[in-house]
Length: 407
Image 1 (cartoon, rainbow, N blue to C red):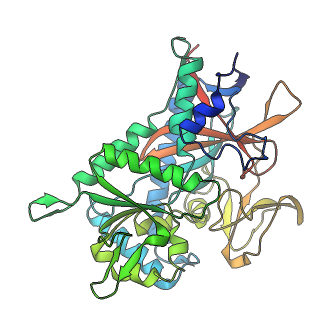
Image 2 (image 1 turned 90 degrees about the horizontal axis):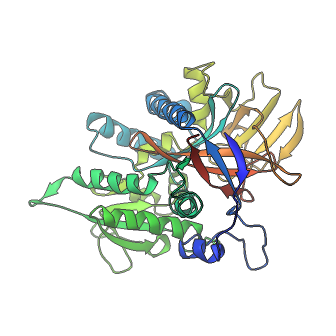
Image 3 (image 1 turned 90 degrees about the vertical axis):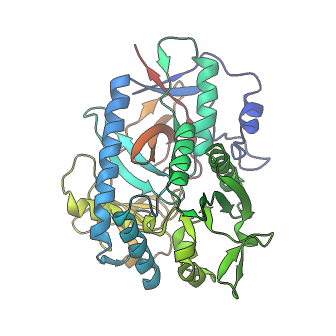
């Protein structure tokens, strides 16, 4: 993989990405550090793409295989209330018995690529509420079409949007019939108080793909969802019963919310996307489980739950942390990077520190790329690269497009 500058920038590129609904390129009117990198790209050879894709799908298989182990309680209840741990188990058993029930929708692996060995290393799995869809599926494609379309040297590995549509269609086909018809009404929800607009923008794109697949969607903010206690079901802002719902909202937060018990009570009559069994994969405890099951695997990094064990240089991660929150790097007991939060030790995962390969630029900066690999229905369907000059990929990273360089 290499990094290089494009020859020119698109006229009005800021307006283009805004029209594509990348509303979180800047963090407010006074911000000048763009999240979207218009000026550079990463390039991978076709064989590299295929090799990484195959490794990602193998990692996904290992994750799915680990669920049975995690669900035994080998790591406790994963910081979840016991009743939600049991809900996840029930959901998983239903899915194992019939793959058409409790179907999941999507996920994103975060990986680093070791150019010397060609191996990717799993940093974490965003299995419940991954974002970064617009930049990977939409903006990256339009950037490619402007700069490289017609140039036979370059291609784009990116069928994220098409895969979203295909997956929603597959889920719809597997919905049970009632009175001779399939219920194709799908509620789509996220919070309305996320300041950057990232959650809603990504949720709206998912809604668009569901519409394209034949679902009749209803968008509702999470705060506007009600509960009909008399009839025992959730309702939207118009009072309509919710039977199928996609939520860009973490399961671990649902478990602690006032309506958490109602989610359990209505489980048999409400289809959730992601399904509750994704709680087994959306925790960083998964990293420790994978290492326990596959010690020394070339795609894994040594990781432990509740204690660093024999690690001396490690990354301390809250099991439910997102976007770099609470991540801290220690070397021989000294904090050398990141910023720990107040997560208790029993809810921390410790992962061996491995250096991220750096890529020089035309400036004095060197960037450390993390590959986001999108997995839909067990298949790797596209990549997106976030990069940073610091030790932790967090809110202040930038997204740099990726192309396939044929020769």
